[in-house]
Image (cartoon, rainbow, N blue to C red; front, side):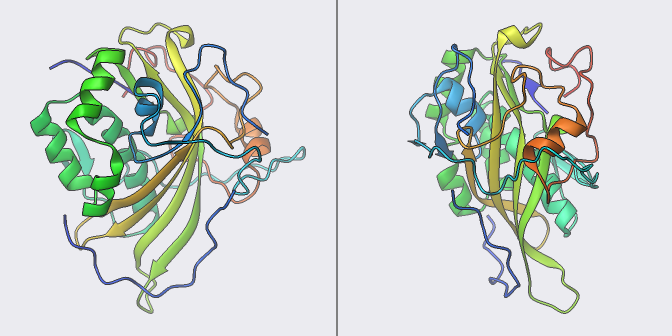
Amino acid sequence: MPVAHEEDTARHPERAVADEVGLPEGDPQVRRDRRLGDRIIGGLVGAVLIAAVVGVLGLRGGDELDPMFEPTDVATALPVGEAAEGAGATGDVAGVPVGFPQSVDGAVSAMMTYGNAADAALFRTPQERAQIADRIFTDEGHAASGLTDQAAAEAQDRLGADALTGCAYEFGAYKVASVGSSDAAQVPFWVVVSTWAPCLAGAGGAQDASDVDIRWTQRTSTLRWDGRDWRVEATVSSDDRVPVPAEPDDVAVTFEERARLVGKGWTLPADATEEVAPDFWSGGTR
């Protein structure tokens, strides 16, 4: 979930042999006039960097809808999964839930949690930012994440130290693209998962959508098990080749509309909802 902020390495396990589902390759998103640009970026701090540090790691996407999505006029109900931001965590580091189960659901929950944690870390102290990064990323993931003190300074300068940031996964959906396992029990050692959700960036004290930049964003992350928890190895974020609701500034998309927009193979998170909580924009529910 988005968070309103207040001022203020493990080595990889040996790569698994697994059956794989192919990863995605490649209608433009309708955007509001006041949006700050559209691009594919590498790194898990995409929602904030797109809005706050325009041009960082920026690559323009294509004109076609990503094939991960299969919109349909005859939607069937999406299943509700067990994964959600924070679900299954057994501890925390600098306030970030950690210690997720070694399961596909655990990896998906970790991906949602760590995605928003990386965004939020831009508005934490340098010491907290380092603690968070060391726990949620592999070495390669950290290097590619864009989570640096310079990026944090630029984000805070643009949005303020009390910014509202993050993706509201409860209004989106997720799709597991690939799973790797090295034993007969099929315990996963790496998971590739895509999420589709509204990602927010705005100054603190937002009262409604008019005060916030909202981007319907797809994030595809590879997570690897390090022996005690999942870590993010790579992430690509895009707000260019993704479906958007009829009312892009309304995050409360119905389950039926989500099913029509994303198509088969997607799953609603365990905390999926169609209603915006009264304190959603202030970050009080995060």
